[in-house]
Length: 171
Image 1 (cartoon, one colour):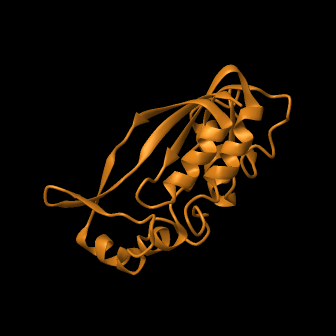
Image 2 (spheres, one colour):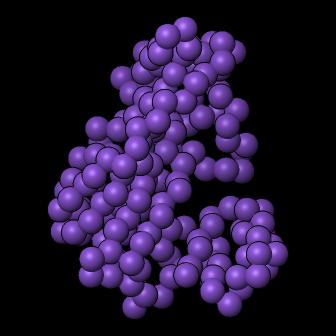
């Protein structure tokens, strides 16, 4: 099993967690971006992509990302799209990739267009709603004119939608 972390401080925590949980004999930790530190001959049955997929402005305004943590870039696609473009190369026959999409806080259509071009099959696994506080909704006001920022409501709560997809059959 391989784990990759781009942020130095998070990489240290990753190493500590591996050691503290007694799985150092099962998990190899690397610091780097996506698949860069993974030997190219490695083929994975499962890739779990937990990458920043929220656009820069909303991510910083919501205070979810400290300055040292990368966001999804201007439109929320700058981390997930390169990952999707590379992931198929690292999948074993019959392997699968799980990846998140911040539907209401990124250009999710652009992300899904790339996913559809790179994989023969996409399956939505879950589409959770995330509640926003009044303060968070106010912090997003400067971004509401962006076409990919869509804050909804469910009952009396303000929400944004996300999704987790499973991608198989790399093209």
